[in-house]
Image (tube, rainbow, N blue to C red; front, side, top):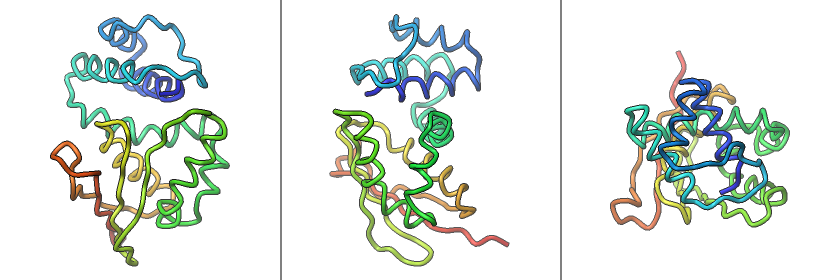
Length: 184
């Protein structure tokens, strides 16, 4: 994973819990990197170790941490210079979601060697769609949920997200039912 992912997790932890907590998490994870370089590719094991240490130190589940991280990810990406790219991905939530693979292809131009997830949509209706998420990495389904919820806010489109299929339960990939909520 590229350092941008690690730096985003670091920024989230420091913003929510302070820099001392981040230092404790890195220590418990046995990660001695002082600063993650944005464009350097680090072993996936680093993120797994950081996640495991963070859940222990913060006394939260991995799913809760992933959800928080997903919500944080959009804003962090904007702060790191990806605002225009994100804004060009779609003019509404359904278009944005439909263009997630194209977004990742554009990001691959910046992060050579990136292993992006793959998304597809089915059962697309006015008020709902099913999002299919496949990744070479396990354990990030709740990052997707948090990110989609936060992106939906950018389009003033509140949503509910329900997991339908779970990769950790043997499904080929994760699927989510995303439903637009009526605003009163």
